[in-house]
Image 1 (cartoon, rainbow, N blue to C red):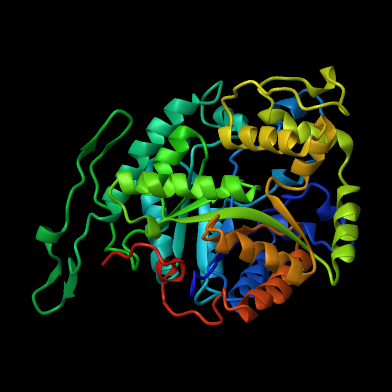
Image 2 (tube, one colour):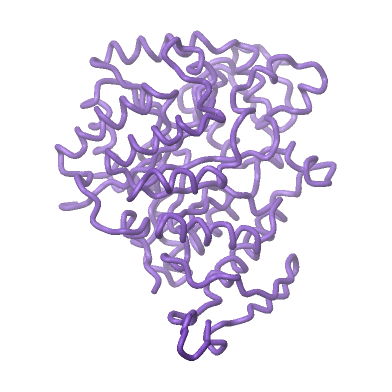
Length: 440
């Protein structure tokens, strides 16, 4: 265990907590306020964090219910946000070391566009780009891309598996030294070191190459978040970093062990894949003050909004048909995100929570809540690291700016004091920060 260091990424997305944006000190204009994102990124960089990460959904959450007159769907703060890939170049100009990562779905994009976009960001940021590969769990996205219903879960992962092979193939389409720009000879690039991909598969036909040289990292860091069987297989084969919703230390260790074992089966070094559970830090000067803040934010979440937020993962159940103060029923299989359904069931069963208690928990954000003074939160993070339950964490503050400030200026310094997180950056690229496979 000696010398083992945490990896830390900051996840910033408007409305992760469905009530915190209503606090007097919160800035809800974060949603499309680039100046606020710049400030958050600079806070993360000052704390020497590995990366800042942004989710994306290409549809308004619960859009179908809003069409039917569901006013609580219209109260959903996660409905308003940038295309995060457009945000990354702006942040690259205002930071120097911080990794910059964003989601771009493999379900409703083309691999050539995604490969070109993230290679461009890698150049713009001088080697700090990361792509979060997802298969879309928001079923409303289908209707924005010419479909009546969401693509089947297994088919989404089949498409994603081929999608990432095309993307990485395109990133590798130029050999080192291919672009010469030789004024004397008049040769701009060496044709022998440029390769056409000529991919033909079930889902894609892509000639290639990309119209640019090898980017600084060659392959931007690949993030992936999925706990279903095909999600784990895809992550173990392709991902550098895996995000997870684990909230139990023993289940988290089993998940990490499973991902690492699968990585070995694919011929990979398991140490080159980092597992980062999500955490929502709620920080106070004392544990009691933090619990009071949590209660204050939770009281700002309308009951109907909490139930509405849980509904997409219900498998079609109407929770109003059950006693909301009674136990969570077994949720049918769903074509939405499998990992969210499993996390809901696990939380409800382990904590013996009612439907309403479970809904309120997820309305506070999907991730493990770490509530307390900085030392209390650091204790839990260190415990997980030392138990090999994780390689680090994806920190998901409840609101901006104080939620971000509390974590970066109070919790992170405590981790640094304990010697389990860096005090200075030691490499130029995001792959250096994370300690994952490097390409030349």
